[in-house]
Image 1 (tube, rainbow, N blue to C red):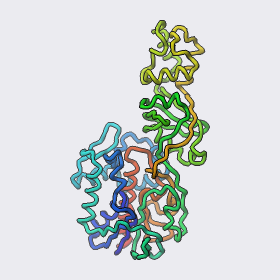
Image 2 (cartoon, one colour):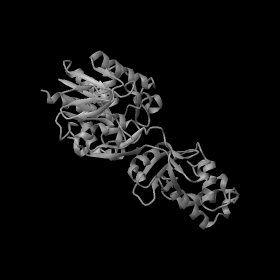
Image 3 (spheres, rainbow, N blue to C red):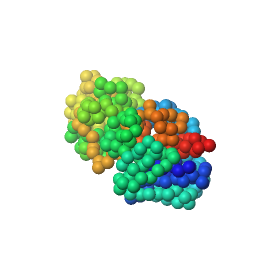
Image 4 (cartoon, one colour):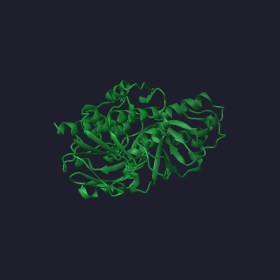
Length: 401
C-alpha cells in the first residue's frame, strides 16, 4: 500500500508515523511545501509547545472547540489527551501539566517535540519530500506537484493545515468538495479608546462580550498599546470569528471587570463607608489595579480627587454600571503576516467523522486544521491534530485489511 500524506505539520507527521509503526511494509511518502516539516510546531506555545491539555476543567467541548466539537468528541474517544501524554512519554519526552491544565514538555522546548517526531519518521522509513507543494490532487489518486512531477498513491491523507485564504486549498478544486471560506481565529483586537490603551501591561480577570451578540469569554485580559489581548480576548476572537469577519472587525466590546462579585452595589457602598475621608482614586476593589481604577472612575464621570463620602448613590450606581458592563469601540484586529489559526477549510459534511475519510472518495482522508475545526488556546488545536491524524491513519490501515 502506498500512502501519500500531503502536509508535514503535526497531523501529517503523526499520521505518517502511526501508519509505518502499525504496518512497516506500507510505503508512506510525506509531501511538504516548505523547507522543513513541523515548522509551526516549532514556534507554538511561544516556542515551548503546548502539545495538549488535561481537559480536567473542560465542562463542554463546545467551549474549547467552537467549530467541530461533535467530530472532536468522537476523535477524542479514539485518541484522547491521556493517549497523547502516554504516546510522547513512551518516546522519552517528559511532560508537565501546569496549573491552567496546559501540558508542555518538561524541557520547555518545542524542538524536543519536533526532533522526536522527525526522528521517528526517519527511523520508520517515511519518505519525506520537502519543497514539494501539491498543485492538484486528482481522483485516483495522483498528486501533481508544482514542478509538474506526479506522485501516485493508493491512499491520500490531506493535512495541509489552516489557510488564510480559500486559494490556499485550490489543489482540491477538482474534487468538488464543499469548502468553508477561511477567516482568522485567535487574534488580538484593536480598541479605539486611548484611555484604555494607555494602560498597556495591565492584567485583569474579566468577562468579555460583543454587544448585541451571545458571544462571551472569560479569563485574563491583557491591555496593550493597540487594544486587548490575553486568553479572554483570544477566546472571544475564536468564538466570534465569523461574526467579526462579517462585520469588518467592528462593534462594541463589553467588559465585566469584576465578574466574580455578585453584588457590586453592596461592595462599593461598603468600600466607601469604610473609607469616607479617603480619595476615591486611592481605594479600589481587589482585582482592579490603581491605574485601571482611575480610568474606570473617569468612565463613570467622577473626579479622581473626590472623597469616598462625597460619591453619592448616583455616583456609585454609575461606577457599578461601568464595572459590570464597560463599553469600548472595536476598530479592527491586529494583522500578522500569516494567521496562526484560522477557522474554515474542508466542510465536515464531506467526511465520515469516525474515520476522517471523504464521503465522496474512498481512500481520501483529512486531518488537522485543513478541516473546519479550530479551538481556543491551551493545547486544544494540537490535540485536534494528534487525534484526527491518528484516526485517519488507523482508518487508512483498516481499509487495506
